[in-house]
Image 1 (cartoon, rainbow, N blue to C red):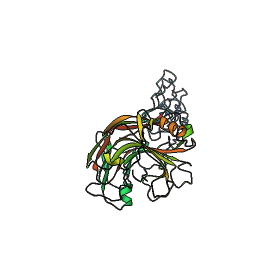
Image 2: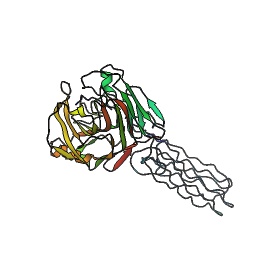
Image 3: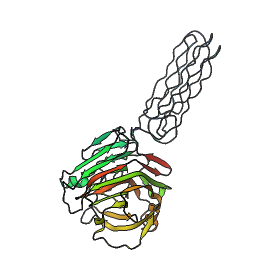
Image 4: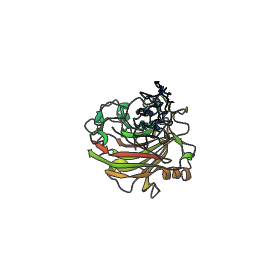
Length: 415
C-alpha cells in the first residue's frame, strides 16, 4: 500500500434591489407581483404592474417574498394614479436550479415573478410565477471563487481543479510533486460532459519505492490535514455545504458512481476506489495537525497491489456489496508523522469498469460498532479517485458521481 497525503468551497451572493414606481393622475389598483424564483446568481424579478386599466391605473406590484434576490419594483400605469413602490423580496436560500425555491443552500435559479394582468376600471390581480428548484448550480459555495466548469476543458497544472457544482475535479499529483518528478498529469472535461484524468508514471517514473502515489480525484468536502500545509493540494474550505458532519449526525449516506472506466498501459501500481477521511476536530475550525482515519473501498486494482500484505481471511463488511479487508493499520503511513488509522476494503474481484452505489452509512456503522471508532468523529470529505504509481499510465473517465448525506444529494455538474 502507498503513503497517502493526497488532499484533495462556493460564495452565496444575495443581490438586494430597491423598488420604485412612477405616479400619474388616476387612482386604480394594479396587480400584485408573483413570487420570485430562488437562487443566488439567477435573474429573478418582481411582479410587473398591471397594464393600463380603462380609466384607472395600477399601482406597482410587490416583489416576491422568497427569492434569493430581492424583487424589482413594478412600474406604474401610463394613465393611472400614483404608483406605490414594490417591496423588496426577502432573501432566502434554495436548492440550485432553474426556478423558484426549495429550501437549503444552493445555486442560481432563473425564474421570474408573474406579471399583473390588466383590469377594466381597476387593475387586475397579478399571478405568481411558478417554478420548482432544480439540482443545477454555479459552484458558488462559501469560499469558492471559481465558477462551475464549462465543457470542454483541460488542465495539466499541478494542484489545479475544476469546480463541478459542489464537487471538485482535482489534479492531485502530490506524490510526484514530493519526489520533484515531472510525470504527466491532466484533468479534463469532454464535450459530452464525461470527465476524468490522464497520467503517465510509466515513461517518467518518479521513484519513492511505491510509497508516494498520486491521487487525481473527485473531491466532495475538505481535506483532513489542518490548514496551511505545504503538501495540501486542495483549498482550505469545503467544496460543499453538506460536509463536514459528525458521524453521529448521519442518518443516511451514499455515493453513486456512473460509468467509471480505466484504461491502463503498463498494468502496474494502480487502483480505483471510493475514499473517506475522518478528523477528531472540525476540519475547518479545529487545531488538528492530521487525520484521525482513512477508509478506502477498492473497485479495481493491479495484481501487485497486495504483494507482502497480511492475509485477513474472510473479514469483510457490506456496503451495498461485500468488501473484503485488504489492509488494516493503526499507524499509517509507516515511518511518517503524523500518522492515522487506515482501513482498506476491496470487492471480491477487480474490475476496470464500475457503476454502482456505495452505502456509506453501513461503512460508518461498521467502523463505530465493530472497529469502535468514536461517533463524534467528523467526516471531512468523500473522494472517488485512483492511486497511481510508477509503471502505470492511462486514462480514467466517469459520467457522473452523486454524493448523498441525510437525503441531500449533490451531483457533479458541468455547464
